[in-house]
Each structure stands twice: as C-alpha cells, then as structure tokens.
Length: 308
Image 1 (cartoon, rainbow, N blue to C red):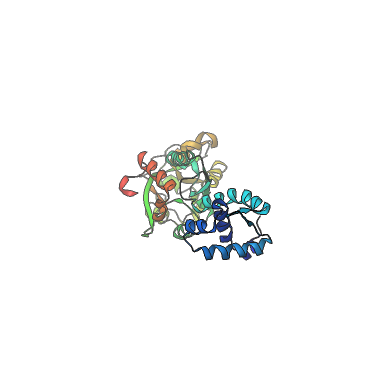
Image 2 (image 1 turned 60 degrees about the horizontal axis):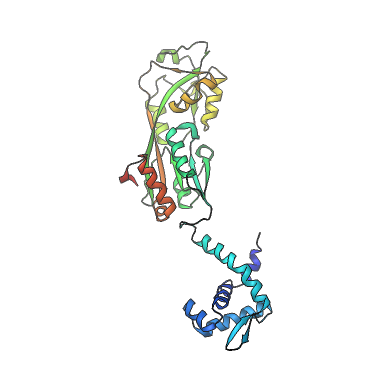
C-alpha cells in the first residue's frame, strides 16, 4: 500500500509537467500543451530537480535530452499516469474494473431479480457486490446519499427528488407450515389458526406493518407470535423444524417447498401482495455504464420507460 503521508508531501502535478517536458523535449512546447507559461514549467522542473536530486534534462545542441534518472522515471510514469487517468474517469467506458453495489432481499425471492443480476453480469468489467437488506439497518436515503449502494430493492418507496423509486415486482404472500403438521391440512379456517402460533417476518416497512394490522386473518394477538426474524431463510427454517405457521413470499416458497418439506395453507381470505421498489440516484444516470444498464432494464420491461 502506498505511503499516503509521503505522497501528501509530494506535489504530483510536478510529474505531469515532467512527462510533458519528456514527450516534447521542450519547455516552451510543454507550456503550450498544458496551457501554462514557460516560466511556470521551468519553476516546476526546478522543484522536481531538487526533490529528486538530479538535473533530469541537460542541454543537447539546441534542445534538451533526458538524464538516465529521467529515462527511468518516464518508464514508470507512463503506465502509472494512464492508470490514474482511468481511475479519474471511472464512470466513463473504460477497461477499468468497477464495483456495482446492490442491496436487496435474498436472491431467490424473485426470478425478476435474478434476471436483473444477469444484466449486471453481462458487463465484463463489472464486479457485482450484493448485500442482504435484512442485515442492514441504514436508512435507504442515507445509503444512496453516501453512495454506499448503486441500486437498492426495498419495500419502502422513497420520496426524494434526488432518487428514482419505481415499482420493480409484486410479491404475493402465502401461509405455510411443514407438511407433517399435526393439526393443519392444506386448507384451514381462521378458527383453525387461532389454535396455532406464528413465525413472522420482522420489518419496519410500512407495507408489513399494515399487513399485521389490516390482514389479521387469524386474529393474532402478541401471545400467538412465537418467533420473529429479519431473515426470511430463518423463518423458513424454523417453520420446517417446528409446528409454527408463517406468512412468506410465494416465489420463495415455490423454490423451497420440496427441499424444506413445506405445504401451503389455503382457504383464507385473499392475502396481500407486497410491492418491491427499485431505488437509485438520478445522478447515477450520468454514468454511461449505469445508463446502459437502465436501458437494458427498460428493454426487458422490468420497469416502464417513463419510470427511468
């Protein structure tokens, strides 16, 4: 790792001026290229000579020629300056590897989310980092404002002019238990469920709070809630290994039901469908890479063109 203190003490602009002198072998031409005065170039060269304890360029006929120290300095600089330029232009289309950070639910929660991830993976110079939002306590708007994420999938719509928040997919809910549950068949009435205890998904999302109050199909009291977790996989696991009953996303249930030996309980009034939103910063659209990704998202009709 670079010694940042030593770099702080060194004026890196001197290296840019040196490289320009080397390429032109002329102080006046270097000044024209950099749009500064020849005097400023000469002063910078003198400072670099003192720093490196070498003349760097010596007179040769009517021009100048580099010393061996200058030759070696150029060999190392030419590649490093190119890397610095690419780093500065990281939002442009370049061969530099870039991280794309996504926060969202467990990936198998939706095939649509998997297809979005595949769009990202089509970019050869993109490294995708995926975080489970259930494990994060940060406010979504703060995450976006501090550029901790490129895209966030959440049940909370964000009403912030700096952010784009659009519906991405609808998530239907089903009631499930283990297949060999001692009391429940594939159908049940609210009266049947009064006798059961529940595992519930723990979330601060308004949609989840409203579900617990307005879709209380079993007349749930606090005493009926035996287990809560912010992890859907933990909810599935505890239902599999106990007599608890739980509300879970239908798509995740379809993926896991055979592996975990679960069954759906029907016969109740219609259960709600939660909306999952895609949230990203409007400023991100200035990045060609991000803009291209959003165009592909629109092309696959994940969101409407007017939403982008």
